[in-house]
Image (cartoon, rainbow, N blue to C red; front, side, top):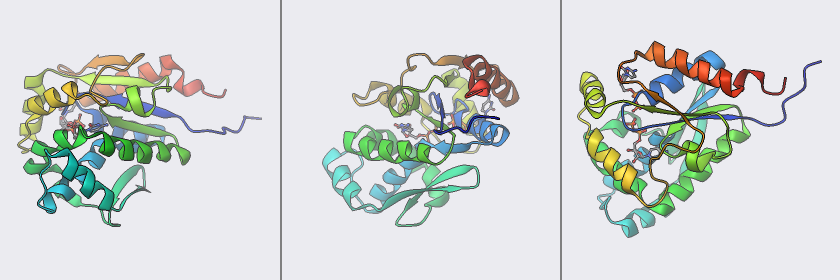
Length: 222
Ligand code: CDP
Ligand code: CDP
């Protein structure tokens, strides 16, 4: 008789902006029947709220004050989690140019990270996850053995965003994300690195599934 699993597991996918994390995580979630969590959406939602309130995203005190007033929650909708602010998903505005420009400053504020990391960890109470972001393998789930870091050259990543019709300062965001004191973007201990500069999405997915197989994802509890 197969043994009943008593806890859930997380696959951590980290990497810089436009490296392909969310596309790959979404396909893995569908293929492996997991919940996909886009943690960047949570940092974007806090940033959007701060901008909407006319506050200064580069002033940590103002960010912390507004954070305390926000009613943040996370639901699972099909195969993906969604961040809600005051019970509503903020929609396409999350990917606006203003949010792109301000999100790294907001994400550097320790109180913001503390609150969002707690929401992220809580999701593992409900199902197996593939969670993508910057600090998933290093801070959110450091104990998971299933860690992948996807990178690509800055010029390739810039081209990918432009092809989506989005104006995104990927290089500047990466610099800020790598330089911050709390939970900077790093290759987590034990993460397997994929350089996707010359790879299609299908190649990256196939490679990721191979890595997960080698790490024992498919033989858990057997
Ligand atoms: O999709 P893209 O890689 O462009 O960005 P994102 O994943 O939506 O993340 C937006 C921003 O949120 C990043 O540039 C980081 O500043 C922050 N972030 C973070 O600090 N930690 C995470 N786990 C996820 C995102
Ligand atoms: O989540 P992240 O910001 O890391 O990247 P993404 O939003 O998944 O991917 C950014 C864009 O690059 C999307 O339009 C993907 O379709 C594209 N992409 C690609 O062309 N080739 C890859 N190997 C990965 C992503």
